Image 1 (cartoon, rainbow, N blue to C red):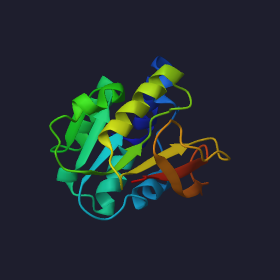
Image 2 (image 1 turned 60 degrees about the vertical axis):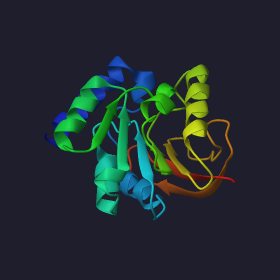
Image 3 (image 1 turned 60 degrees about the horizontal axis):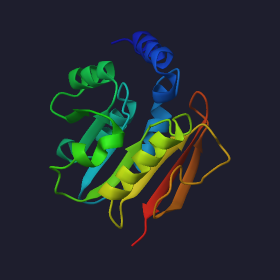
Length: 187
């Protein structure tokens, strides 16, 4: 798929569901690489929330995350279908992060990272609270939660949870510029 068509498809989904898509265009390769670089080394699953058209997925694979360790959770049907075409063999779950613990109920390995492209600041607070509960339920001490936002001056965890901010970076080569925060779950 051409880059122009990818942007068109992304913009179409934004127009259809602006509070769930959160951006009018896909994340840049620079933002994707920065987020992937924050995934800790080691064993365990990496959960990607809201992969959209796949720029983060591509960066995670290029970073060396094993395909068997990567689980994508995508709410939008058209994006889930596109991801299956682009990344055959990956575990792609068409579902909502509000039911994350149920979607991942068969996963026994620890979760080392949750990489989120969800637009938590534009979602209703009740939805963010539910996603927060789900993230707290599936994570364990040592799990890293990685989130980006277009709000460059606020590094607070976007939900209630036992996480503390360990790193933050601003990616100027993204449209619009974005802030990436990594939060580690405390013991």
